[in-house]
Length: 374
Image (tube, rainbow, N blue to C red; front, side, top):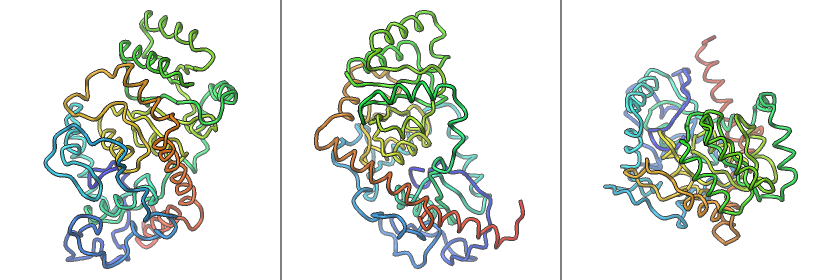
């Protein structure tokens, strides 16, 4: 989700006849989030606040900004005391790809027309942001995620799973760093070389997913084949698609280098795997700030600077970040501890009586009250 109110949400058209008097009632002014600076105390429960008791430790220290990671080098005019986010971070991602601002406006228009929103998250991870988002919208927001924990379709999609699992089975527990940048980000050959050299220089076992489209040039394909030969004992390159959820849930995987797409980040955290963050566009930069500075479960591949976001990431950045993530120091151990607790929260939220189960129930009740059949 990440952020308030600029979160990437799945919009659901639902009943506006919500039983909660504080959201969307006639004549009611735009509500103010109880978590925001200077806001009054919440007067009544909303979908975002119900079910909190089902999120163990939701009010604990896990959601506090982590002092172990440096602040952004990008200048800003103000900082939110509740999240540590700077205003210009939220604005910078709007200019990183053409027409992104227009897309955001279209999403906002869709939200305006909808009766509520469903977000793929859970209260034990983003309780304060769900509440803030709901207050900003003035409409119900439901958080019944992580959705992938209820999915069993991934295993049937790939022919690579048996080979990948067999390789992982040979590796020691929590020693492998998984590397994947989603389906949209494309690496140029020069950047591909830096990733490969960085992984090799880190000395850590790795499982790297490379798109077929990234190795169409003969020289890129030859270089990758040479890397696979050199690192055959501790590295595996998967060409094409890989069973990500199965990989992240394997005992051998101890880290994930990710583009910070929301689904990938949520899958990793909910499986208890810390991340090396390398955002490419859109909300991925905000997702990085959440992982690194708020949740304390990530290591940036390099410090964030909006003006240098398009500069190449070199092998030294990659080797350092991987080594830091997979290290044995107190900070690394604390990062892993937090991830394990978020994993417990995620699975607890999806269980009967958990916050996500409760949010899904509230969503269904909203449809039933509205009398809609679509």
